[in-house]
Length: 265
Length: 265
Image (tube, rainbow over all chains, first blue to last red; front, side, top):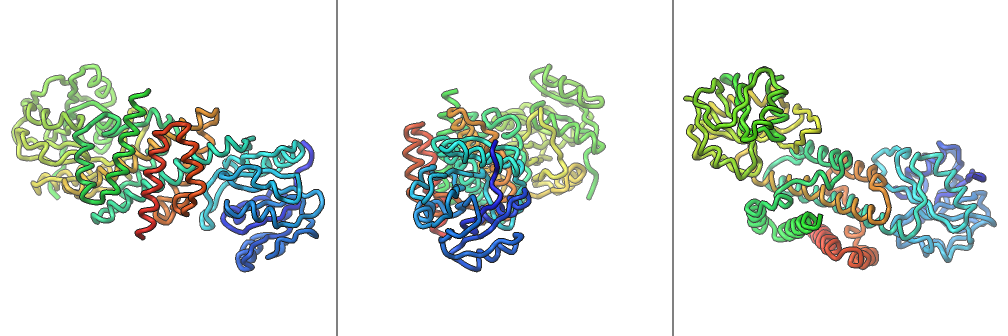
């Protein structure tokens, strides 16, 4: 297995760093620095940690950290990797589902990797890392071993996932998270505009997801589209065209695809 | 309040009847008959009940039941209502979110109503009715009072919802249940085709929904579409066009609508 990483610098103080840094400390690591361009943001996270220091410059040449975790937005990764100054023998990883390993190609070290916790993070919501899949990648087997040991210290779901697989996983995550949330938003808006309470749908939504995860979404599919109930579909489309034509378009696109899939299975 | 209904006949033995009949008995009602065209299906449900009888004909003229609950498919409601023979003073309700009250217009009684439990039911999954919204409608105030009393015996969420509101609720339920499930199915298929396990997404999906229900889906919206990350969107679309052009169409439709909504709020 080799050793894990004892000292870690957190480069970024957003939602991922907010949850990851304290969890790494709870697993026995020391977070030495928290970097953010915004001193205030870095300070907010440092308060949650034992003895991390605030840093607003990317010069880490004197850092004692062995691992630098880039938890910045996707489009900042390559640029931060290019600018960062690291001590000798440092390892650097990013935490993104949407970026390949080689987003770190211009980092001043060959010890690069990916440490991607597959979850949506918000500062106000606590998370339990033990069930969050940590997707790891590195071309360097020593780095991969050390990352594995680190990841196993915080999660029971540690997976080796290469850049191509991670890209597919990221598309699936967009469908399952962003798009699912958007449909819930459409439902909420529709009810709200008719003075109906979104909480009316809460038990249905909870059961929909519980059922899909337990017996699988293919077996769970029901509704007018699946049973080719054209009368109800046309009724809904007619109503939605009056309510909001953009809603009708989404309804139609999903109905068509449900029927396309049903016709092919 | 008036009295509730003590004796109830269940007309239909599908998923709704399967769960509703035992729950009504647990609340103190007697289910006198279970009707299904299929004797076998009726028997399966009758076994779950105290002393209900199997019935395969729609002649209930000698039934002791006061309330007849039509739990049949949407497109069968009007026809069953037309054919059914009822005792004097009987009340009949349907249980559908997708049908108006007047789907019962041809029933041989003026005591008609709707008793719509807003949930998705499958025989193999237990349900807790206490949190399921029961949406009631009737033009007859006595019927409405009796239905209210009955519904309150099984649920804490009893709502008066007219046919127009119920139609809107039904569209919202299609978005939140059928369409959401379909997105999960797409994600599952995508992962499966790349030898990746759908369980990798389970924690993300659970958190997505928990967050949307707690802080509201409008506040929860994230992702490439919401942040206008055209680079990632184009990357995903390019990949999906190769994987399956129908997936790309759905991705595009939802991305466009997320941005349309974001641009209007």
